[in-house]
Image (cartoon, rainbow, N blue to C red; front, side, top):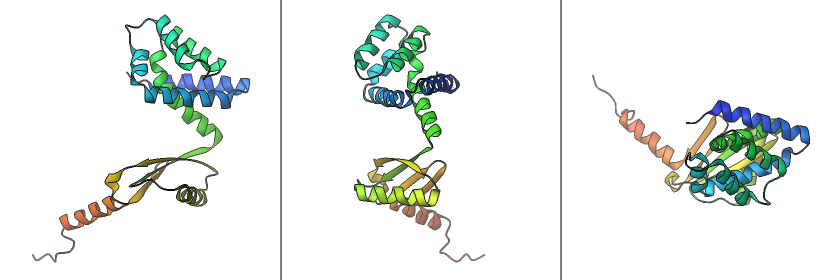
Length: 187
């Protein structure tokens, strides 16, 4: 069962410890690595949450998967989670840590969804425009492709959403026809 408060607390503890030891950047890199491992291997995620697999075997698998790819502090953190029986929470702790790190560093995540892949030049122009209009210094651009948009783009920054897609425009036209805005109503 998801427990965002627990994940937030563990992430905050790891963040504070990493800051104290001057290893914040390396732990952030480790968390990104672990996020990719979990994203690419649903079996790894299932193993972490499984009550059937012993904690020793879970730690052995974590060690094998992360060997040479994560630092001592992150490895010690995973050992702590396994010892406390919280290894299944790693799936929630990782994004919580990454979000807290970005908050600490003032990094804003901007999500761009387009109907087709866009060039690096277009991405850099979008980032420049968002920086200028949103008064944001550091921006991390996440891009995705959704052919259902038909054309245009959807841009999300925090709680703001700009939908400039053709699919949205077609839906708006459909709503106007449903409301009969174009037909004179005779009573």
